Length: 245
Image 1 (cartoon, rainbow, N blue to C red):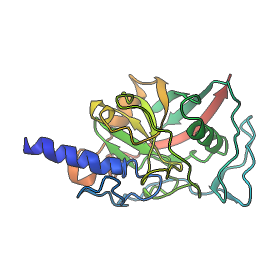
Image 2: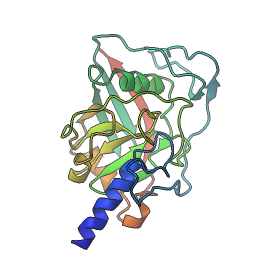
Image 3: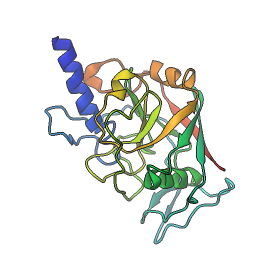
């Protein structure tokens, strides 16, 4: 029973994380639920790609043909760059294989617009997923691999109803209400699906759920005290390619 309680506390801290996991959009050390568990920015050295330009002033919508020069910092949040009524999918290529995400622009237009825009700016390319907790989540989207990186802005929550998370759900990490940035997590197991609805749900893995997602989960750090940092193996995002239809 004590082990179960400890696991629950770790999960809460991670969500706070996923505050850590999820508190990722801002500070890995923030506990949004005011519990005794916190997530610190304690990651091991990782070969992540931090090179790229800073876009000052207004953020223009990126090219849709993959020709955009990489950007890793923005002074302002992007405008609406997605087309109303269009269907967006993302193919994420990692060193453990590919997986595809169907993005839900109807329920989470802000988050989908943000993800599509950052992906088209190649923001995620060459970065690592700095946290992986077995049967729970893999957290990605921080070019610094520190757990505290962000694109330079934040945007509002678009929270799901309780019970909407399932294995393969893609949601935003945060450090509290309305602090979404670039960090996101993939739910890799049943414990992650039990998260409270405090994290914007913006997509679902449609391909790779039986292959790549388990491969990512297999590299998770099983030490409860580590809160998934670092994974047992480097988990690298090679590219994120957006398709619009």
